[in-house]
Structure formats: structure tokens, C-alpha cells
Image (cartoon, rainbow, N blue to C red; front, side):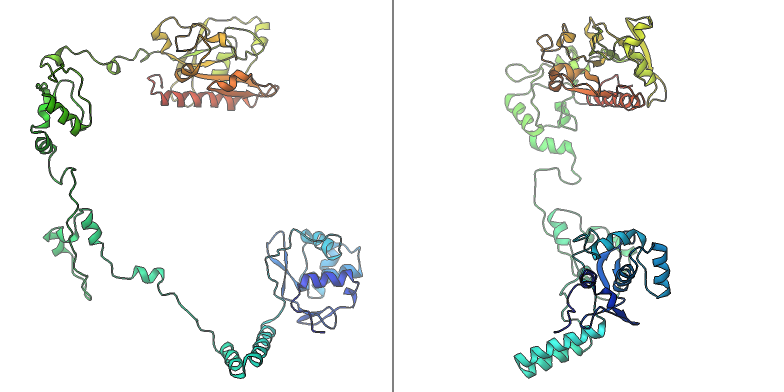
Length: 481
């Protein structure tokens, strides 16, 4: 029978170990002879990948380990290394030895280190050429002597590229190109229009002249032309200078008229045309017939957005529950200690120590601030609109009665959507507890504390101030100090 060259070398060695024929295998300087029919190159690779170097073991490494273990199954790894070096064989590392032996001895059917996608090299170059020539010779005899000779001769010739790409990346970049048509289409200034001074300063390159630039007429639009002032645009489209209408550059209307002028009386047709051009509805100060009072600007009151913010310059307020229930983690006993000192001290411990409960207290925030910022902590519900404007956060206990008499829409009925849009809510709980079902319907941030370990309090402390800063930034609050 023909030798099984096309078989996996690792599988051949494993079959020899399991069949108890590995002891009769021999070797020479270049090959390992498993039997009369199967010889493997010593330096050829198998598809067993090492764990450390991510390389593939050679045939001589696998074979010598298998033969050495067969002759001395209880041989220690240092003794195996000594024998391998003395026999001039590359050894297998101790990391790979155990897993490889389990596979070679048949105790495991496969190994995670065997790469099935790797094609092992078990023939040297001369054997590969002989094998290829033989196969081509057979093909020539079957398909015709001339065809066979041509195939064999072509393979023996020097290796030449049989094909090459028509265009490569480099050849494409070396082509002469001109984007003048694209630039002209969008109305961009062409290189030929850059001015004579710049042309004179740049020397013409020797060689092939670039192709002439073609200036294509750009598409005309109703946008502002280059170099044309906006005053002329409004005068052309509305019949008057846009400053006379009190229109600012962005298309809005000045409260006192353009450049100190008052808005003239506009007809219905002029007002409709102005709305079409500017994209704004002109309704403020207009009479039923479309005209605008000339003295209306002097008697106008500032809009609500221009009113002074009632919270500007005041101290932000953080509300805590007034109760002492088991679900209450923060109240006036311990809220200030956490917001300043980063540590959660259960309020009942402070209550047992006869700690004094305050109605309100001022804390100083130093987290991520160069200068300390003062916050007011209280469990009293504000009584005025200006005080409510200063409330930035609230610790919730999971009870809807906590929000009774709050001024926001739906608060008295338990609908807290608007409430948590105005005030950021926080629900603190221990990691051993389960949150109430109502908490899942509220837009609040949960702060989870470990029951008996306090080193995780710092993370919840940072989370609290991070969410506060983000909330004030999103609402553009004047309390974001």
C-alpha cells in the first residue's frame, strides 16, 4: 500500500501510541520513521498550538515526547528535558506536556490546542515538487501527451505572475485628474480665478501641461449671492431695507426696532411677505388690520424669559423625608453627614445617641469644586414660589404622601412626572432590599448601599453629585454653581 502522506502527522503519532507501535519507531537526522510506510520530517509542523508562544509543535517534539513517555511512563519533566537535549530533539514545555499526553494516549478524543484550520506541513520542498510533477504527469497521460508536457513544463519554469490588476491604488492616484467640473457645479472659486499675483509667484512645472479648467455655470438659487449684502437682499425681495422693518441678521425682530427705529405700519400684504421671507410669525403689537402701533415699543413689558430668575444667587435646596420609617435611609439626622463626609451613618444610630435633629442645615460641597458651595438641606416643604425654584433634589422614601401639597401638576394625585422633571429624585436603598413597585414608575436615580460595608459609600456619593450636576446643566438652572 502507498504511504499515508496526506494524513495528519499528529494523528499518525497518536495511532502509533494507542496501537503500541511507537516503541519500534526510529529516527535519523531528517526524518522520524513510525513504521515502514510512514515517515515524517522532523522539522515539519503539526496542528497542535502551544499555550504560551502560540506556535505549532514540530513532529520531532511530539514524537520524542510520545516515545520517551512510552519507555518511561513515570519520568519526571526535568529528566525528559535532559534526554531530549542529549538526543538533539526540541522538547515540549511543561505547560503543554500534560494536555498533549492525554490526547496522544487516547484518554481524551481532542484538545483545545488543536487548530483544525491549520494545515500541517509534513513534506519537504523536494517531496512536494515530486508529488506535484507526478500528479501532472498522470494528468498529461490521461488528457494527452502534449497537454501533459505543457503542464509539467509550465510548472518547472520560473514563477511568474499569471495576472496583474488593471488598476491599483497607487496607479489610480498617479492619474491626471481635474475636479474643476465639480467645483464649478457648486459655484466654488476655480484655480484660474485666484488672481494674477498668485499665478506669477508659482512656477509652472516642466513637462505635461495640465488640462484646461472648464468653468461650468453654477445652479442659481435663491440664497444670498457672494459679496451681496443682506440689506440689498431684503430690499430686492420686500421692497424696503430690512433695517427699516426692525429685522436683525438672524431673521428675528428687534424689540425696539432696527438700529433704534420703530416698526412702521405694515399692510397685510407686506406683513405676509415679511413672514414668508423671514420664516417668523409677526403677531406681537399688531392691530387687527395688520398695522403696528408706532408707540407700542415704548410701552411693552419685558417677556417672561427676560424676567429675573427667582433662584439666581440663592442657595440650592435638597429635601429629605420627614419620617423615621424603616424604608427611610436619609433624614435630617444623617443626610448632611453623607453629603459632606461621604459616609452613610444610619439615622437610628444617631437617634439612639441623642443626636440633635435640626429643621434645616447648611452643608458645604467640596467635591469637584475649587471653592466650597453651600447647599441647604431641610425636611420642610417650601411655602413660596421663589423657595420652590431653589429646590434641586429630593430623597424619596417610596410613599406618595411625601409629595402632598407640592405645587407641581399631578403631585397631589400621585402623578409625579412633572415633579421629577423639575426636581431630581433619589431613592437610596440597601443591596439586600427590594425596591417598591412604585419606584419603578418614577423617574428617580437609585443609590444602592452595602448593608454592612461602608467602603462603597464613596461611589454613591460621587453618583449623587454627578447626577445633580447633569440635571442642573440640562435644565439650564442658574443654581449650577
